Picture: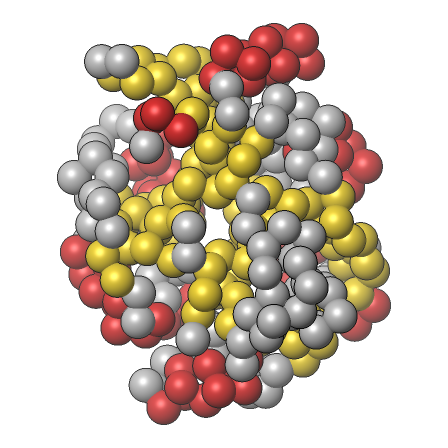
Length: 125
Length: 148
């Protein structure tokens, strides 16, 4: 697998706009292309998305149990097909989510040392 | 000025075992490994584009990382922003009234570093890092113009 870069990290929060405003104010970050309608800020070639998760999602469970904070990392890979093959070969659990023509791989956090880790390809950005 | 995400810090139980996923499956090369004695931690930086993944293995249950592991298990620990002047960045944070953990920068794996208090940053433990001049990122250009 060829992993290219950090595309974005996700801050889970009950107040996405407020959290984004905090980061804008503290760190002078500028708004970026929104991720799934969530307020998003740019930092170098990566982004920080502030997400108020929907009830019943794993992110909502993480927010409820661990509180507000960094909850997810999304990495860009060169090829999702290669990534799938590598994960299968290594026996790593994952799911593939498709929205329209876009795909994303969600890796089992148990295999990623507790990290909610998403893999996307360049075209999915 | 903050230029990029320097790294995402992840607490792991066992560094060698963690390499099996982060290095061998994801293909991230190990850039640097170091034991930080005063933090009771062994840490590794793995390069991913212009950034890094920092894997942190506690060496004792009583260290900060050890307590995190005992309480929360393996997982994301902190987010580090790179700056070309960590002293100025920390002074700026204090001037804004942001609670800090480190009153002054100190040496760390990523360079001269300091941490802000997560209570001031929406639960996110934020680190600032000014890389040492002779330790430029293996891919990205160093903000002070060092070799890449």
